[in-house]
Length: 522
Image (cartoon, rainbow, N blue to C red; front, top):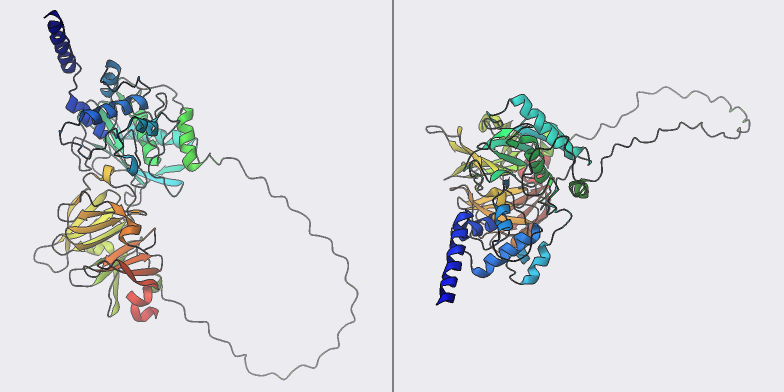
């Protein structure tokens, strides 16, 4: 009887501890799902994890953060889970390791010197800007915010070959900064003042969000903007979270530190992606005297030739005809308009209208058709029942035909793709639509489906480009669906024509200009 009472007393203590620590089992399950420790595909559902998955999550969390690996929610584990932090995943797991359930699974997630994210920028000169409307917080003076953001980038450029500068041109900026609240459209809502301070997208999406419900300060008590921004820009440049608790890229906010210097762990991480700073001057060029040649033997003077009879001017061969500029038009975005015309966009804001039968019709500016559309975008689609959608990283612009007009467009939506930070694994290379609910978003290696009606990524449609479109090259510039089966893929000055039904190529490496622009370029 006495043992039974002791047992009940212990159960009561466990129950009270579970309430007092402020986290229920469901809270811990959601934490594990949110930060990559559990990959059971159910974030935000509130469905309890199985005891086996819950234990494995806690083991991974404890192992990553150098805690005692017990698999139980002890005091140190809960205290760390409740600490203010970045909203990005701690573990970026390989797809084939996601469902592993054995204890040796922990070896995949042991503490490491630094973690690279899923990508890096393909260049070392980058630019950033502040999103129009929400680029600044009302808590801080804009000039001081600009200064702290520039300082945050400088900690990375000082130790690497990167160059990062500010630009006013939002359409051409590589990294866009904004202050947001709660559900702000990217599928990763903020939680108000408290746990999640900010999050950022990996390259080459280039978006950094700061929770405007936090108390942002500069060199003071509160949440120091410089410290958080420097961490988030590490993600923007390609670094994942570090398991070294002293590193800037550790997941948790460590507070303001005067005269901050990057930890060696962070330095090795950024240099593994972009190399050391190239500030060593090149050696001066030495001008050498010309080599001395032996004197030539004296030659006899040649006899004077009799002048030839003067004839008419020499016949000159006319230069070959030049190729019209229109034939060198770069296809950076292509769509089929409601009337059947094909519109091709370049990166300078120009559009050419054409048909497959008649070729070139006219050249206009993109802003004349789509006001406020970005110049530097990834691709564009047009679905008659849903409208025209421009894609740029995780942002999209949606246009509809103005009522009572034939072709005038109104910008109706400018928003983030919900869940893009978690679901878009690569920079968008090309997009095409066969219907309003069947839009393909293509990266270098991966392809996903998107709904132009709901403006969301379709769950369970993730796959490889090489499997979905065998024979199509990597690094596309644009894509176009002529019908539900006939797809054109564009890269450089060439195109590939693909049959979506039989999944085979119909044409390979054909020149774009003669086919699409027509008589001017034959």
